[in-house]
Image (cartoon, rainbow over all chains, first blue to last red):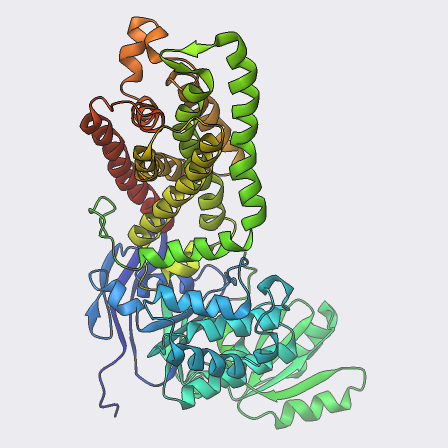
Length: 308
Length: 259
């Protein structure tokens, strides 16, 4: 049991824009010292929820408290203890890397003394940017900009770090670097709050997560719990199937739940033995046998139609 | 969240000012060319060129009349430019405010800092003109130094409305309306080039509600060594414009960014 009080408590949190409901009365509790994820398709209400936590989006209804302080009354005090990594980098293009960090410290009301310079040196090391400290931000690659944004979010030594889709648009190498930095932060005891639509990211990083869609929370738990609760443990994925093949397989293969998406066929099952035996006998079929993951849960809960 | 809540300004406003100073220092060369070059050209060209035909304006040389008026109008244009093009850049395309708003520095502080900076730039340009005027032998006496705080106030007075324009703008072209419909007409009728008393009577009454004639009424006697008439009224008008426009700007920017 977690003895320390939760870091964020939301009750019946709502946000409306005219008739459009962005966040539809959600409840959640975010424990201290964990990595907590909001997983959902575009337009699910994840970013709106984060903005409400920062006191940047007025609530339409419900209650929200962060560090046991109420929103919006104490938003400024709350923001003093949060580090934010926004979805799109908004580094100051008029400044170099080190000036970006210094100025950001000033916005937190920190004075530019030796202690701060030492912290900046450490953060540059953490972000692997020490060599480039005097470079202008527009000369940096996407991955470097993201690392600098994360370093900037740590300038006030925050208790809570909010990351809105931290690896969207990055190449795989850069993404792995960000993940390892986030793990380091969690080991340092910081609470991380993350939104993502990358299942792999959520599965690797999050101790606990909520799946959101259309402004509602569909379910909440650890990745393993969610997988266990919603999908069969094993999946056989067949690729490049035309309608005839799909129909043949549907006839031949039984005792499994099937989902058809584009030219792929997914077979969810508790015991894959019999199905695999049949599939191996059909030499012209390409298939993949794997344990069920968060993506399967996500697609089951949020549906498979395209989102814009 | 009440958008109309009265603003509270904190120390953090100085961080915004500091940011802008730092950026400006980097571009000091071109900034100085503009600050000194433009008034020199104006004063030499119009002051001596036109002044040769005009001779005296009121009880002073035309170049003195012009220089003491341009100190005020350049504070207006400097603060207006900064409050529109630069503030809009930081507010919308560059997303600088978005980054700052994730810290304890909020919109009240950001806009207070921006207004301080607009006024600082007005002082820089006003001081440059004062130096040029001094070299041209127009400045009469030490009281001319009082122009510096006055120009700061003029900067605040025009920064607020410019920031309101930034909050309404969806692109840079929008500012043409404000320049063509407000700033330029005011520049022409406010006694910078000729005395307000030459305007038709109705117009004279109307221009008393504009801030620039009050600004000129302060800078002209201070530069040319005459007595300032009704200083309290002029300062009150400029301060009222500054305070009310700051409040409106804060409300407008809250409505734009806190959604």
